[in-house]
Length: 166
Image (cartoon, rainbow, N blue to C red; front, side, top):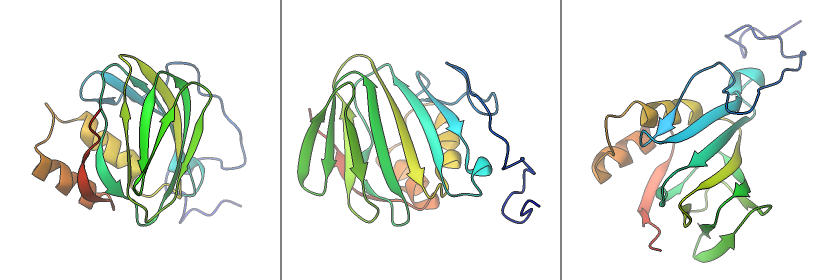
């Protein structure tokens, strides 16, 4: 029997599923900055909040500000492009086939260095990350640093510094 309290969408948690290329789990479209598709591949609804997985297609250089997830670990797997990641004070160059683990409570960020990029990333537990990306995708333009910090905070993250310079 399913735990309905942890599964408000009443999704059959014992049934597998397939999400096709260029599709999102529930056929929703989220574009960060209006140009970068960020598709939910596995939803927190599928895992009782334990995991969420996204596929990001970057069509521009750049990345988020330095921030902390107090409650989530994060994993990135690079499918295409060149990226610079920062964990604490250390910086790492990643390219196709590379994986990086970003532990909770440690400041981190990344920047896409190439014109095009693609990666898969996970949050464990899922937290409020799906709603965070929906919020960003619904903005008419880039938020000011103050607006961005508020959006991060309302989704259980803390901005602690600027984006990476590259």
